[in-house]
Length: 237
Image (cartoon, rainbow, N blue to C red):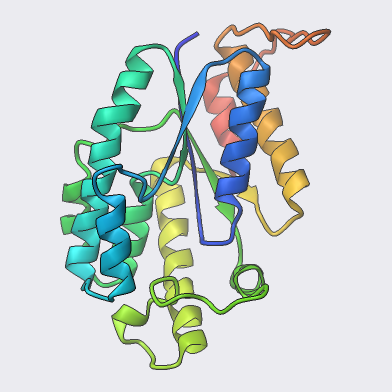
């Protein structure tokens, strides 16, 4: 089977890490070799990014550039070689995160788009869609949003929670725009995580069937279906 690049996108708190971990395990259980990659996880950059964020040393343009550098380091060192070797990649955020966050921070859209012209296009983009109320409640479970999460660097408000609300509204608008432009498959992430996991797995099983994959799980057979890829993508509406 052709290796797939599967991406999870969405707001902080939408459950991307949980769902990407769950999907990686699910794929492995079905005999599909896969690796995971996460935003800000480049071995040569992650410490520098953490230090810059901790010291609040980034302005919107440098914030954009340093994350793009992290992205390309992972793409070239890990993602491309894995796909070439037949290994599926599950990504907790892809370059769409940059397209959303950077533009929400006021960086010109054409500039940000230019940064990611060499980015690989995923086979599947799951958009864990949350409304502002759901995101606010998730983030505020036992803590306050952090400086960057709240978009405090944008100067929209000196109040942390007010800045979070304004910045998150910008992010939601931007993600909805990207979803239309890039064919995201929306998943209602306001629901309990187990319900989200079930929907993701159901959709992935259909993709595996389309690619002719036979499950290696004991007692489970993936039966032929008549869905086409356009049919599957149409379910995002």
